[in-house]
Image (cartoon, rainbow, N blue to C red; front, top):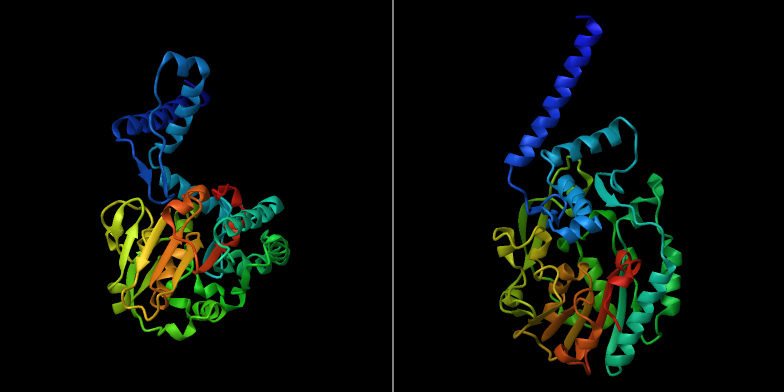
Amino acid sequence: MNVKKVSSIATAVLFSAIVGGFFLGHVLSPDGEFTTSERRRLAQFPEISASTLQSGTFMTNFEKYSLDQFPLRDSFRSLKAFCAYNIFGQKDNNDIYETEGYLAKIEYPMKENQITGAAVKFNTILDTYLQDAEVYFAMVPDKNYFLAEKHGYLRLDYDRLQNLFFENLSPDFQVIDIFDTLEIGDYYRTDTHWDQAKLAETVDRIAEGMGFTDRLTGAYTENTVENFYGVYAGQSAIAAEPDTLTYLTSDVLDGCTVTNLETGATTVYNLDKLTDGSSMDNYDIFLDGPAALITVENPAASTDRELILFRDSFGSSIAPLFVEAYAKVTLVDLRYLSSEYLGDYVSFGDTDVLFLYSTTILNTSEMLKVK
């Protein structure tokens, strides 16, 4: 038997062994329900029926299933990321890049129709519900504002974004500029969000703009959760050092009554989410994470004023720092609660109202359920 034939047989045997090994690994391993690293549910084995086979949906869904349930999937994702960065010299992987010790996700291009659409949606809520309220708006910059341009990554034109948005926003909104109160060190290294313990200057700016500075003490106790891996750590598939998640407590916050519209009684910091498996993201300890409507009632308040906060996920961690200034704070997330039902759950009137939204949400405002 010549060398060439032996080599061909050996290659065929090795290839068959590898394919067979992965096949057996897939068959013998139980299917996962979700991936913690990517913060999403995994595709499950699709339904087999005459209609799904005939329409082709079975094969489409089976392909998604096989990719999600592939043995050693996370290891191969990490290998791909390593090769992308270190061998092929790519500047990002899955649109996520690392620079200055921070992970960030490219946000590009700017969708002008989404920016103007966001302003129109907020104007609709103002005209429908907020004629008797003091209404404010603050925009939160994403991490690319601090990192992208100087390191050669695509970024939004933030000046254009702000000008376009505020040109279309009703002049009845009182704008509070918080961009200069923030720097990259105020954000988690591995996550999209800001660090609650570093928001003192931002809170002061908002409090000054809304007139409740004299009702804040700023007296908090820092508490930490170690080994916090933010959403970008998993999505990037690269080895990243964990963050320390910090949350601020006080006697006032401990004495509050907190209610989640969907699940009932909860707490300002729902630490059960760290252990009970109800969340794939430790950031969700802040006011239950993604939730349509949360109310926080403060019996120790020195005023009967109420605050309604229209917000995205950034609002979850800054809202507790407003609580001592109000008798009641209501958090509304328009990604989950349609505006047509607001009147059923929120009492509007002579209240303070703050719209607090990140540039990322404004650039994808189609997700806001405003009619």
